[in-house]
Amino acid sequence: MSSLKFRNLNFGIAETAHPVLHSVGQNLIEIRKATTKVRMLTGTYMLQADKHKFSQYTIDPICLLCHSEIEDILHVLTRCPVLGNERKEYFTPIKQFVTENSPSGTWKLLFNNKLAVTQLILDCTTYTEQLGFKEDSSLQLETLTRHFCFKLHYHRLSLLKKLDF
Ligand SMILES: [Zn+2]
Image 1 (cartoon, rainbow, N blue to C red):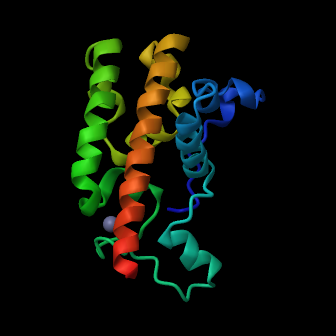
Image 2 (tube, helix red, strand yellow; image 1 turned 90 degrees about the horizontal axis):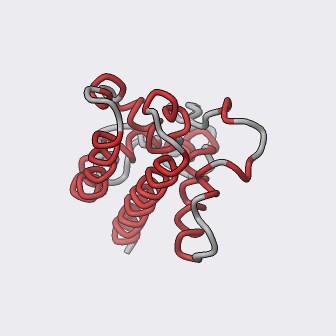
Image 3 (cartoon, helix red, strand yellow; image 1 turned 45 degrees about the vertical axis):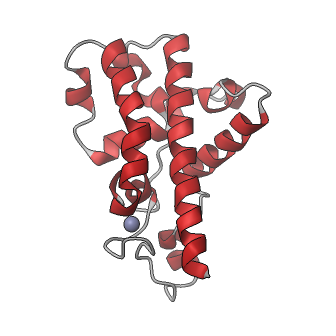
């Protein structure tokens, strides 16, 4: 799972035009959030599954928070039950925004599985055309998903810190 690539490679070669960066502006907090999201998007956000791989399989890939599954990016963003409340709070506006701004039935059609939802969160440009999104909507969605990623990241880290002490 950890080798899955969610970045939309068809987006084009102009990195600066990608909404993950384009929507950030000069705001330092937003830049910090975007950095987290870029790491998640490019597969450089270190999770148990990655530690497992880099430790030559000596470190356990299972999630330290829920102990129920391998911790990869899909687990963190869509499945880990320990992050459930946080996820629900920040995912609701994403679902609402997409539902309100795309043809009726689109959400159910496109995002009926966790992989597609993960893809939407990490790189919404994959779905821009299907959603009928113009640049404005894409940037708004990007802001919502950036917020979502950062909140989960922050909550995950603070829980892991508590485990350490
Ligand atoms: Zn978990």
